[in-house]
Amino acid sequence: MKTSRIARETARISQHSEIITTRRTTRSFAKSIHGFAAEDAGVELNQEISRDDDASSLSSVNSKVILDIEESITPKSTPRKRKRGFESPITAATALPAVTTRTSPLKEKSASQNGQQLRPRIKKGRRQPAKQVVTDDGEVEIHPPANWAEIYSAVQEMRKRVLAPVDTMGCERIAEDKRTPRVKRFQTLIALMLSSQTKDTTNAIAMRRLQTELPQPGLTLENILAVEPTRLNELIYAVGFHNNKTRYIKAAALVLRDQFDGDIPDTVEGLMSLPGVGPKMAYLCMSSAWGQTVGIGVDVHVHRITNLWGWHKTREPEETRKALEAWLPREKWHEINHLLVGFGQTICLPVGRRCGNCTLSTRGLCPGAVTAR
Image (cartoon, rainbow, N blue to C red; front, top):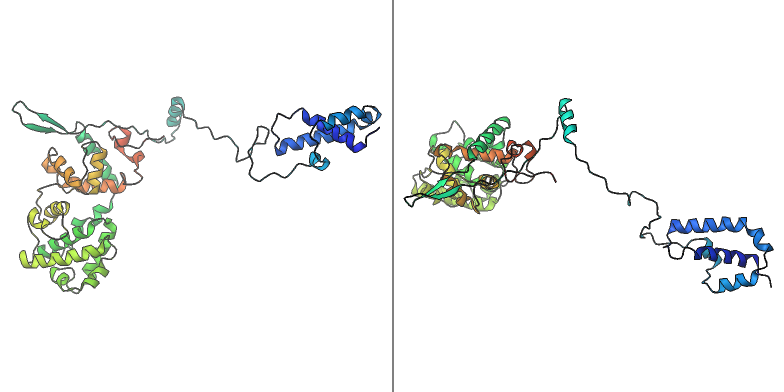
């Protein structure tokens, strides 16, 4: 009994596919099987007709799982998302990751000779904190960090090259020059009270509104006492926590009028007795308004940067102030706040520190330097 032509072709394709049953069929692999099977069936079709092995062919076919003829030639539709096999072509999604290379020292040397600018290498420094040393007499002495003078001098040089917002809009520079000393001291105090959690640029805008939009003669104690809280809140709306600061300024103005004869206190304790004034504002106000440096004004920049340098491990600005005053020369107490605030605004930013532009990082003086991975 002779089988039909379609049955013989089906048997031929099934026998061919049995060879590769252990391989996982993918879309591209299935196409290659079907194309090969179709071509092979066409070439040897005449030879198959002349053979008288129909019975054996049928028996071999029946022992295997026979697919429908259309399924054996036309591949089934596969899901859009599939696992790619070993035989699948490499596309953008399966491309190998890019290989990163490192420039050899010889190439760096040749590039520098050709005048090409290379990024400076960042070196993480070693912590050298201040140390407590017990003398023979039993007294405790604080020895400064071994490299503090080198760090301080390098920061001074960097600050000369870049103008920071604090250089033109800092609290000690906002008071109007043509005012009386008492009014200038009061404006300095107000600027410090507004500066908490506020950028210098924003603080300068709010101060300018108080100086120009309050009734003549502008920002004075008398006008602060007379202005309505809602109007004062509108004028300082840009600063952080303006609602609280409105209450503090109005309350502090009453204390200045009733207890300090309309002027600001000339002691740290007196300044800290005012609502909304803490140690940082008090020490800075004593230095800026009265010209008396009795302590270091430590804000978030001074606190953060000195801890990055490894000078100490402190949790609060007030703790940092005491640690610095224990060894830092007194002649630098006034300038260190201005120096490090500007440094923190331009190079050692709170987020995204520019260690590549910092001399301390290239010279291996900063333990907190961010090195390239």
